[in-house]
Length: 396
Ligand SMILES: *Cc1c(COP(=O)(O)O)cnc(C)c1O
Image (cartoon, rainbow, N blue to C red):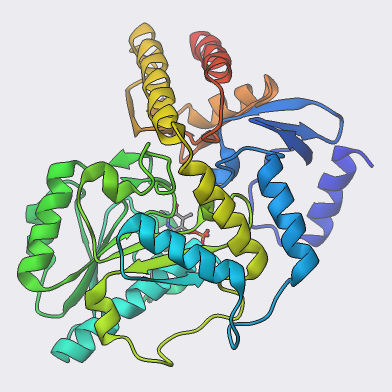
C-alpha cells in the first residue's frame, strides 16, 4: 500500500473534520518519524505535546509490553496496580492532595470544572459561573469549548452553558471586572497553546492567586499542553511558583497513550463525595503504566535541566532568525520547549515548505508557527530543523 492509497481510503470512510498533511507514519525513532515510503521527518510537533520521549523509547515500550501480558482493563469498580502507583507518584511529585484519572484533556477540564461547581454550590449555594481568557483553548466538549476564548471554535454551536465570562490574559483588572458572587472558578493555561503560545507572567498568576483567595474562588491551571516537563519544570505551576487549587494534565502524561489527570488540593477533597464522578477507562492499567515511565524518566538526573538548556538554545536560534528577518518575523514567545513564532499571514505556507524539507511544525493559525518538540530532542536536531526554517523564511 502507498501513502496516496491510504489518503484516498481515509477520504472515503473518515468523517472529514481534519485538515491533514499528506504523510502516513508507520514508525519512528527518537525525534524522527518515518512514512510509508521510508522517508524520515524531523519532528517539532511531538504529537502535539504528547510524545515527550519521542518515538520507540525502549523503557516505555517494554513497560507497555509487560502490562499487556498482565491485564488490559479491569474497570474502576475494582483496583489496579499501575493506577495506584501513578496516583502516588503524581500526588507526591506535585504536593497536591489527591488525583482523579480520565482519558483526555477536555475530560480533565470537565472534571475540574465540575469539582469547582460542587465547591461553589455546596459552600455558597449560588456559585456556578466560570471565568476564562481570550485566546484560550480548553477542549472540544461543549463546556470546554464554551470556555475556549476563540470565536472560530464557537461557530454554529451556540448556545453554550450559561455563566461563562472572558478576561484578558496578564491583566488582573480585567478579571476583577467580570468576577461576581456567582463565579466559582477561574481557568487559565499558564502558557496558552492553541491560541498562539502566549505565556502568562508570574506576576499575573500570583495576582490571580491572590484575587481567587480573596473571593474563595477555585483557581484551575490547565496544564494539558504546557505541563509535564515542557517548561523545564515537571509542572507548569512550579515554573511560575504559583499553586492553583486544581491542575489538569493529559497530552504528554501517557507518553503517547491516552490518559489525563486532575490534581486537587485539600479544599476540593473536603467537598467531594462518593458518587460525584466516575470514568470507565480513566486510569486504565496500560495507560497508567506508560505514564509511570514518563514520570520516572522526567524525574531522572538532569532531565528537566536539559529541557531548560535546550529551551534556551531554541530561543536563541529563533531570536537570531527574527533579527535576521524583522520584516517577516514579528515576535517569538515561549518557555522551555514550547515556542511560537509570528509570521503574519505566512505561517501555513512555512509549515508546508518545512514539510517538503521533511521537518514537521504546526501552525496555530495563519500567523503563528508552533514548536513542541519531544523533550528528548538532541541539540543537533534543534539546530538542523531551525537552519531549515531560516532558509525557508529567507526565501519568503
Ligand atoms: C489539547 C488541549 C486540551 C484538550 O485535550 P484533548 O485531549 O484533545 O481533549 C485542553 N487544554 C489544552 C490547554 C490543550 O492544549
